Length: 115
Image 1 (cartoon, one colour):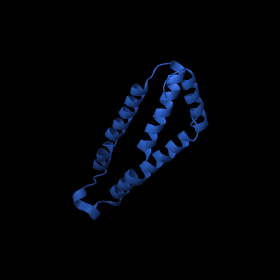
Image 2 (spheres, helix red, strand yellow):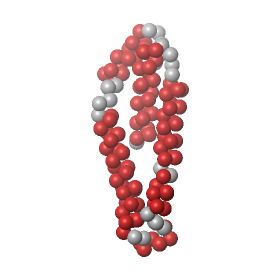
Image 3 (cartoon, helix red, strand yellow):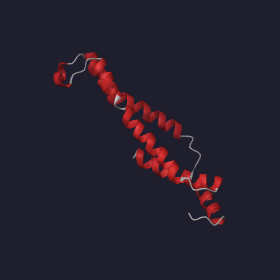
Image 4 (tube, helix red, strand yellow):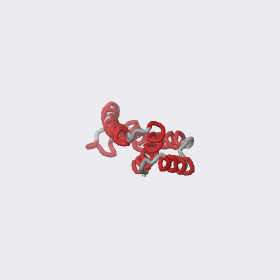
């Protein structure tokens, strides 16, 4: 849902940018969103190096040390949880409400720009 929500929010932001600048920058905004998504996927590869540093070996299975299993659990559970809570906290103050977006769309229509 996170990726879909980000794209929906980006479309609304694109309308706001178009109203403020008079230029449709939707392609540029979506390219930044795509870049950040790809960077996130690339950064997730760091987990392999972290697991290697604590000598986690998939072949050992349950025979891995308690420390390496704890690091695996932290990477799998705590990392995403902390990042999602941080995202929710940041988005809590998101200023583009449905009412504000309706005002933006009405202003765009008044200027003769297609919505």
